[in-house]
Length: 227
Image (cartoon, rainbow, N blue to C red):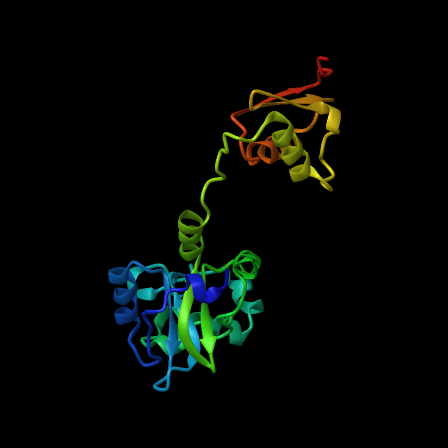
């Protein structure tokens, strides 16, 4: 699955000369938390998000006065930038210009990793320098709901086949348990073995639950298998 499969193509955008108030209203009425800023030819200039509008003089959320000695050590550039963020009336003055983008062919897995690493909520999709879509965290969640069906419980799967699938799901994992510690009876997977940590135990259980045909999973960690 790639960006083109899940992106929102009808993107709400802002212009650099749009007023900050107008941009804020557009985001509120559209129910979005950010939008690309583009020029007349559709080329990306930046992004304006809720984060860019958090510190505003009009609503009393500007940066609080600092101690005089902090003002002394702050650079002129830093203070000037802060003033612009709080008082500027146009989008071009408050938008973020260091924007991460992806192409339509970018794998969804790479996009999810990018959003997490950069701690951002959305990423514009670019073709020939122009914005053709946007992928947000909600797009990824929507894809999970619509394109990841539950693993079917196949009635014809016998206990032996279920056991092999459980072992295959754990194969190569450092937390995997030994073959003899996985016993399947009437579709119920019993997991035996030494005491394991909570996270390791959860991983073993999830691997077992995802095997086709499994009716239930019961963990007996810390107890020897019953012959």
